[in-house]
Image 1: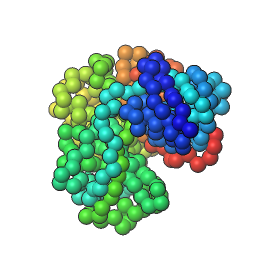
Image 2: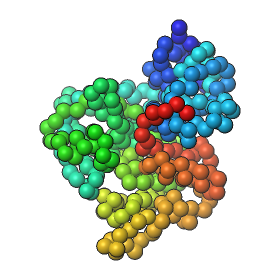
Image 3: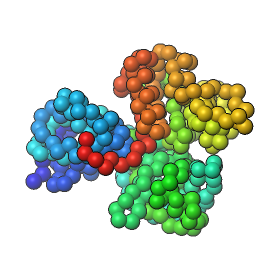
Length: 340
């Protein structure tokens, strides 16, 4: 039987069908609550159960620790109602009117940016364009219901081709892209998805923190900001292991030359002797803390592997006074396979 969910403090109400999660039902009825991975791993959709009971579903322990569950928290991408609910969560208004669509796309161009990073340009049918917000992602739809999520590195105004940055982690789809995919192949995808995008209602300086291919959605956000004439101070910290992993290093260097409100700080954690690196070293989020010990008047957008995102969130909020509601993240996470 369907259950009713009321979002606080907005008092928006929607119905959850049998088998649906709270997030799935909210999106179906046009209410966008903050979310990221949709598989119980990143914690972006975490909110509070004010009334009612849920099946918590599958989630990773770091995303919903036992103590938080005991305190009434839930991951709404996994939680399925067992009664009517009242919940408290962050609603996102900017993405509400953008439809989520399933579309075909042709692999228009492939280029290796690094030994383990591939750039894909996808071309939609001539009569189609994808409306999205800079920073959102798409799901590539594979056989047997499998999906792989990739952030769009192209900004919304440059929508003739969708740009993706794929790192080869050795999985089935990665191996297919690097070993067998060719230009002209057809893919199907669903999108746009996610709530990782620049909040336009704020005038605060922005700190972007990217790890590896976490640069992709941040690239889209920065290029979109330039296109729209955003005057806010924008600083990008891009962390990687070795110099080759800064696979588009020259691009943010160009941005810095061309835009007075933009600054670029590359950081390597394991520079090779052959790199002859003279720049910043260590963990990328630590470089931010060294330069800006007080982040209370900034917005922070961070994207990359879960360890980096979690460390940035922990240290920025605890030691640099970053407000919780001014820290936005997109964590590149694997699917959760075991119940917490």
